[in-house]
Length: 341
Image (cartoon, rainbow, N blue to C red; front, top):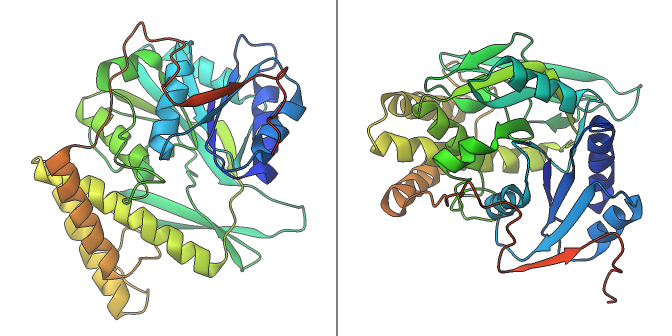
């Protein structure tokens, strides 16, 4: 299990504890790849005092590089991922294992991700939005805060042809992959993701790459996680702009490579963004219930051209490359003290 984190000591403890409960009795361990700028996250992890946890502080530039570092460290046939602001269900790990056991052709399994309910008095409503390409959803808490990166479908599905990843397959905050899939198709694209100037969509590129290769990706709603990332309206607008830039960049890249679906998605997305701008967010031909300004689309297209010229930058994973440690890292075990300030 791999969890990447950066400067979220107030959330990482709950995330890791939920995973430790889920792997209870299983031959599994949790790899924490920490990019934090202080020692607070390290203190939280070391306080858990659990031998199943391997903590690594890494000096890498972005989330994709951190995830790739975690993949190289993993030694299991199945590598599962969640985020530092998520909590997984107690049966999460066992259900993932069952899905792979039942479908030997599955390259990856994506799960259902709901919004985390902070207290019983909270009122959460889910807003779904359908387009010709699939369905998206976000949650609203007490009509004030918003949570995205959710996958709310109740029907299991299998995909092996190109489709829009977040609307059909799932999110990178709740998925698992056969190690062999990374060996055959490469790792996360390191010119995408948080910490790069495109600042997202590394999971979109990875999933779409797999689908173009004809790999079978399962959506299993029984693989359950909860996303604890509630944002006010201003922070939500910033997040949606980042998502739009990344998504448009990825589909622009594939469109330039001749992908027909990617071209159709871009045309539809542009119409939706323009209509939303003209009608103050009430566009009918949109992929999402909320669309950012047109400038985000233009920046995304520039990002796609950049990726087309230079490549997304996904490194290879050698089948024998287990227990790899990158050139820039600090390894901290439970028995080691945290360096003094």
